[in-house]
Length: 85
Image 1 (cartoon, rainbow, N blue to C red):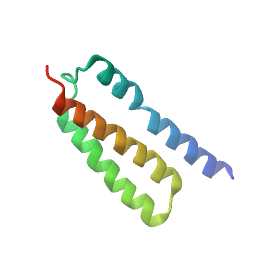
Image 2: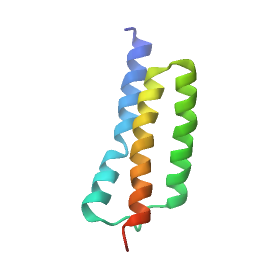
Image 3: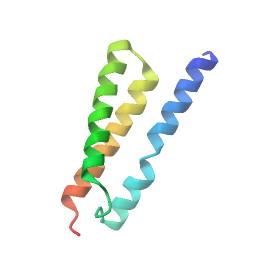
């Protein structure tokens, strides 16, 4: 693995973990009032587009990062729609 691939995997990992604290806090507190549903829908849509792109070009760092972010942003959308204020 060369430095370009390594940097792609590191970037993929770091991008993937950015949503974990928010998902955890929202789940733990059962409160999603401060989350913007518009922003979450944009994030979810953009990760789907990036996922299709990564799959088409077989770019594993892109597939990995966006697959994980897609799941985490979907969880936040579900939390936003299901948790009462």
